[in-house]
Length: 398
Image (tube, rainbow, N blue to C red):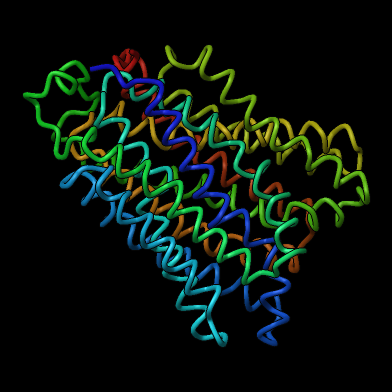
């Protein structure tokens, strides 16, 4: 059975709501949260980092359960957990209970966002999953475009607690019914006898699987470190390089570049080697950083950085779902995605702090060049995979 486009659209809606209510809302609400609890903003962001780290530890469990019980069923309970935990953040009377609720929100996210949604697409039809994952990320890429202004408008009207109350309701009213509808379509534990799986043979032999998964985790962890360090520090980083108000304009290029990367990949990237596409994503991240470090405060150089880095960032999200499927096939796909999420989130939680420390020791330009080196190391890991497996044509194209 082909994965119908309406399944992609349904998951796209839940990903927009999920990312919008859980991630893109936090930055706009953090100052008010800190002020109401008498805390510094750094303390609030630290709580978020700790929550992301704990979510990373939970990701392999959510992936294993998605394989065992079906991704749709896991997403049903994840929607309930997200709504309840968002409600708990809205009603938190003091800082400690807020942090506990925030941890619960991030743990719930491990059961409803990209990694589990990718598994759902593979369980509906593994043969078309690569194309559908790209389509899904294109739709979900509009989460920030929709929820940044929505969060700001709601915040001005009802405060941060009211925003979280509304967002708890959105998860119940929109995401829960969609995930409940999707649950019967996702099949737990695909086997080699499944015709959808049989036409998607893995590129990696069983005896090499352990070595390859370790290399894959290192590659995605390094890539996640680069992305997290830059995205959190984007505006202050550009200001410290002397771009001033031009830095704000430069950041507006990042989102469209991410979306454009997914459009281009949907048109041209499906037939490409997934290890090669992953290597390209890491090299684009590094190239953007190097251009910024070497040309700042030249505004056109900063614009080139935003476009190239945004393009690489958009591709990195896609290959996090498509590369493991190409290398290992659909059997055990959920658990492998869980381990990749663990590697990315575990490293990403510390990346902004490490970036700020290194900037304090040296300079922003030097730190960017060092970070570009981390991206090159990630590309090197993907190059090994490409050299060994990339010249075998993947049959994941619908």
